[in-house]
Each structure stands twice: as structure tokens, then as C-alpha cells.
Length: 402
Image 1 (cartoon, rainbow, N blue to C red):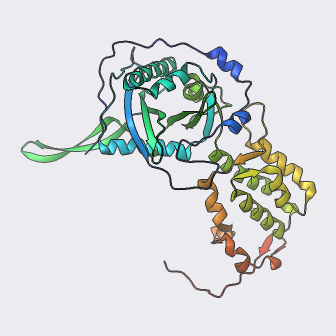
Image 2: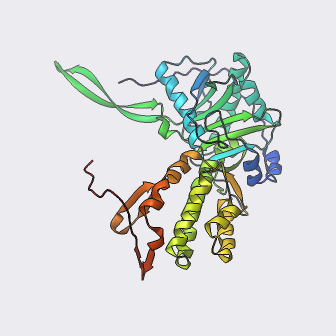
Image 3: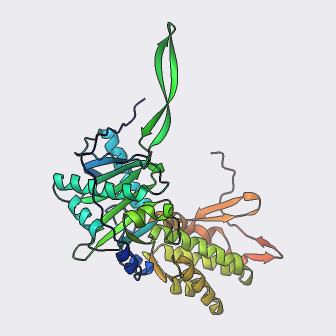
């Protein structure tokens, strides 16, 4: 069975790590909403201000990986960049692509030109400077892991580019080793047998990646934008485990990514309808959904304009909808309003293109959104007691076997 192994060697030195807690507390005055408006979570792969396009191919330039086990007194810091086999190179490319397309958070460094930002700058320079800065970052992460019950793992530091661009970029990945079942053939007692065992320290599959940051210095501006995949991150959480990577290690201020905001917007619409739908006619509900598809088809959603379109015949209900969504989209304490956000095309496009109606007994009707008016006679849609009556019009009616 093929598997990737990580080789480690003894470290010659341990990084000295300055702390920046006071600066982080001062930077808390910058609200999450402000971070979200300023950040540009592009990473060269998943632009959030334009319609979706094919993801550019990531190309790894160089990588170094350090072993961090908080049960050991010292981290094992590599002294030179790694040589990647083609399959391992593809795996790291998939890690970066997954982060860019599925990250739930964006943000910036609390200290725009602080130590972490300077180390990231150094990662973009020559190989010797790259190696030294990566060791400094690994030492800082190890120090933050040490007093906490953080799973042992590696810090991988990557320089990469994307097709069509020459800009060198940075990825910081915490890789948690996986345990997998392996088999070998051995001759035992004169017979060839299969022996099963467990392989430790194997690389995680891309779908199991827990933490990855893509910091990118803003051209012509101070500081970095960060695209963050961190499945434990919660800005409102007070536990060290939830904060150790993005806050303690990176010193980052977070805001929800367009992906998270788009999903949350959809859920908030459903929650509002669940509480207020009885005051709307079936035609009103369909108009609400049509307005939601309309705004999700654009580059960004303005909550007030959405409410005006969704509740065109019910102006008195718009304020409750606006407040429900604007406050619900915000993160942090106290709650902050988000009145406009960029749409994540991966999340929105399926909802924009197809209408799926849920019926009794788990039955569903699915149809292209642009054919809804011709297939479903909305003029004859009505509610009788607690039941709906729908009229479908079609030239074809047959059971589909495949």
C-alpha cells in the first residue's frame, strides 16, 4: 500500500517568540463587519465578487514541513525544503484549493505589520529566508499548542502560484496525522499470509483537512487578508481550543466568509418564513422565493432591497425580515448587523437554477427555475385549511425508470 511518510531530524535551535496580546486586544476595536467589508478572500481560486469560473490550477513552488508534538519538549524543525512526489504534490494542491473554495472565514492580522506579517513577507523571499521564517512560525505554533490539549501534528508551509498569474502566495497548514489500516504479505510457518496492521503518521485526505490559512498581502495597502479553513474556529467561543490557531497562533480577526454568509442567508429566510408564513398567501410565499433566487443570482445581496422585493405586498412585514437577517448574519458579541454581502456562487447556483418543492411523505418536485411559471399554475395555487392545492401543466406525463 502506497503511503506518504514524513521524515524528521533533530533541531539545532528553537525560535524565540514575541507575544502580541496587547496589540490584539487593541485591534479588537475593528469590528468583524469592518474586516468582512475590507477583506478580499480571493486566494487566486475562488473570487467572491464575480460569477463562478473554473478554479485555476494551483502549482506548488516549494514546501517545508515541521513536526509538532506537545508531549515532546521540543518541536522537530526541518532544515531544508522538501522534494514532493507527484501524488503528494497533488494532495497539497487539493488542500489549498479546498481552503479557497470551502473556507468559512476571512480576516486580517490584528497587527497589520506585526511579527506574523513580517514572517509571511519573509516566506515570499529566497529559499534560505523561507526556511528560517517557517521555523519561526512552527516554533510559535508549538508554543501555543504546548499548554493546551491540542492534537499533535505538523505545520506545512507552502509557496504556490496559480495558473495565469506570477504572484507567489503562502499557505500555512496544520496537518493532523491519520491512522489507517494497512496489509502486508509475509511468509509465516511456511505459508504466505496477509498480515494487517495500523499505519500511523499518514497524511490526511483533503476532505479531512482541519486548519489552513491563506494569507495574502494587499497590493498597495497595509496588512494581509486571510482566507481561513478552521473547523474549530468560533469568534464568540471562549475556549482555547477554538481560538488557538486563528487567534493565538495567527493573531487574526475573523469575519464570516461569503460562503458562510450565503448559507446563513438561506437558512435565515427559511426560519423567518417558518414563523411568519401563515400571514402570507401561497402566491406570496412563491414571490418570496422568486425574490431570493433573484438576489442570489447577483454578485451581492442587499438585505433591504431583498425585503422590498420579497414582500412587495406586505410593507409592514419588511422591517422584521430585515432585522432578522441583518442581525442573524452578524458574528461576535454584541451582535453586529450585516446589511450587504457578496454571494458565494458554489452555494447559490444550485438554488438559483433549480426549484425543489417539498411535499407530503418526503415527496419532492424538482424543476428548472426558468420553467416554473409554465409548469406550475401559480394563479390557481391556494390553501384549503392546512393543505395546499397545486395545478401542474405539462405536455408529458410518464413515470421515469432511470
